[in-house]
Image (cartoon, rainbow, N blue to C red; front, side):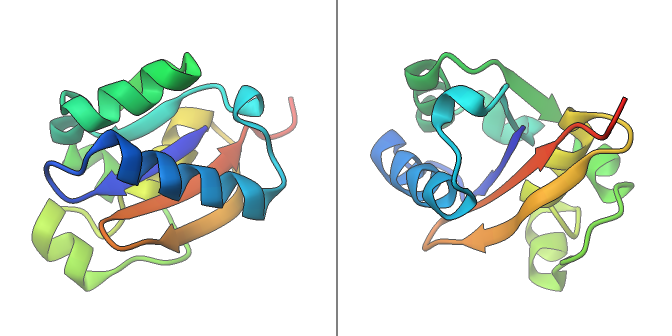
Length: 123
């Protein structure tokens, strides 16, 4: 699962560039990603919906309170102040990937977006 944090109103092309860069770093193809997970208030934004549709990914949306309950390696006070949770990208990726998920790409911060990737844990 790909976790995406972003400022409000970021256009598809900017989100796509951040996601493509993160996938390259992780050595993954877009087809290996099961879906895009993000903060509930970002899930309805045009840029987020368009980038998910481009890849055929479902969008999983989480409220800030649920994201705040996820244990992440890189919480940020600035994110907590802006979003109500110390992590969006990492927390969303881990929650969406399910119990025992493994963060294979810790958050990568871009100008107005942050991307993290998690895979389901061993069954």
